[in-house]
Length: 172
Image (cartoon, rainbow, N blue to C red; front, side, top):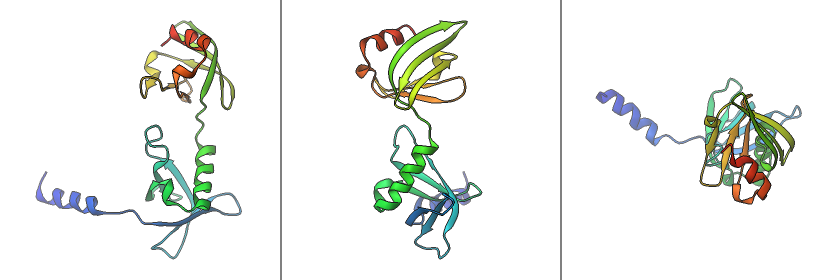
């Protein structure tokens, strides 16, 4: 790295994201973001969690219609109540992340495991191609990604009923 690269890196270290005045939905249900240092709002904005599993309430990227980040919301706690409600509703509808509450069947055929389960969003049947699609976030919390790319969470293995844990035991 030469001196020019160092200078460029130092500039980014001191940079701060523009402050959000408020976030609301327009009449069409699209997000509109108002930044403190800009006269014009950002219409048709979108949001994305930067760390959805580690920090679901923090580090939310606010993007313009073209998908470019315009600011980084470090925490939902910094928003006023109305803006926070809008962002939480958007995240809830945007991110399909059912939590498995009970496993009714778990079987493996031809290397693919099918799990029939009940979730907080209704019954599901998911297929998992390999154990590589199971990610442990800690000793009891895990994510399962099915062959379609959908993610399902088991928030705490120890809170599942005995039969559910037994059914998953052979697979996990």
